[in-house]
Image 1 (cartoon, rainbow, N blue to C red):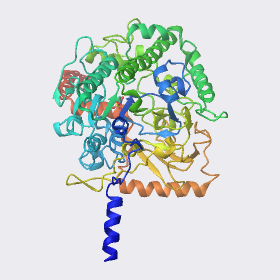
Image 2: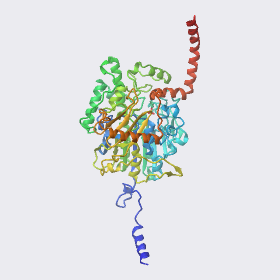
Image 3: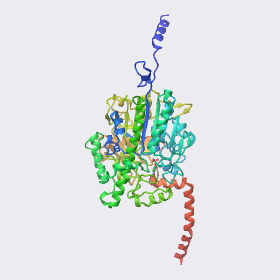
Image 4: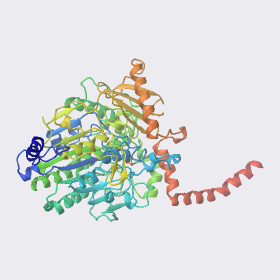
Length: 601
Ligand SMILES: O=[N+]([O-])c1ccc(OS(=O)(=O)O)cc1
């Protein structure tokens, strides 16, 4: 009897308590309804933004809005992502490693032999569940405006992957001024509004329009009283690099001293900001040309291409400022957590001396773009920065996008808002793109999904929550021994503790594995492979095990590089190109026959 009375008393005491398996960090101690509302989450994603392209990471580019987020939050200096676009987006959206999420490479550059492999589908697998779906199921309104690039069949569009309202781009990129494709691979720019093909307005400029759209979505539903998740993947600073004239004017003359000078000033800026150690060394980049060897006209041209790049970053920051002001005006700012990052390192397909580049001229002939100096960055102009300036944008890191050197994989990450303790802090904890989804779940107090979600078997989230670091309760996100591996088209990396092994294919790398202490040596200048052979072997074994489990495809020598593969895939995927090729062969045939006959005579 006494046990029954005891059990009844316990029930009376404990029943009124809410049962939290994972308590929302924002649930307030008192019963004030407005304070118990879960926080809004805004995930801001720049495209191809380099490690030191923000003022708060050492840049000369003016980014006061993002820097203000940093001063009210935390800057991660050792955050890594995929070296390429959709693999990074797959990890960000799901917390699952990109191979397990079906995006071992982007669809546009995957080798032919991988087309039927589940790890290389190139679109987001239904074996994953997105953070948007998880938030929707936890009482959030979910909105997205920007580049998706994770699939374009109806079931793969963001509208059917957890977002209530969307304005999304299906392709790898698009023009920033009008409704047109940016490379011959695409017949048109594939924009969708709430899952249906959509047109762009006449006064379109990408950063301005996408911010307006997100504001429109948030504004439409605020009365619903639900918290919201807003995903804003900008087109800035993806190719074609384009910006309004008034922003370009501010950067004219800023890059006249060339890429060597910029690389040095970014290193100094990063050291001054506390982003990298004071004794950080830099590599000589094998793809960086001697600035002095350029003619005056070439230098003038390269400097302007980079000026447009700076302008495009600042324009993004400016329009982001309008979103922040809107949230302040609506009284939502204080209850919003902002996450700002980039999908991968600086883009690197722009060739030096582009003005006279045959490929650019051929491509421009197909697309109707011009790359004239006077109109660079404006409507109708195709612009990209050179490999040499790309290295400077990632400075003091090595190389850029597509490569598993730090310049391809290490980018800014800022998390800002009320829950960050000791604001303005910098963390050098290693962190990875798969950490963003579990961090958001942790912030809102939602559990991680189990291996079956909505009746489907799903891949396990592999990332860790950054919340203990945000709260200044822990300094590391990963235990010393936990490996994090990555591969893209034969360029690979594995991180463990303060160390990284990387494999870079030639001609950028030497086709061999190397070992670096990336905490002390972010520039990857000293290969420790022979000095610490045990550490190296341990990491290499961990990589080999992971690669087997993840279904990594070993690319053959013939893969060449992503640009060659993009051209090949353009020919395969674009029927018009094939017809053009056949026509060209038919035209050349009589000349060939004539030449053969003549050489026989
Ligand atoms: O030059 N390429 O090979 C290339 C250019 C852009 C691009 O877009 S991405 O953002 O999807 O990586 C992909 C490949």
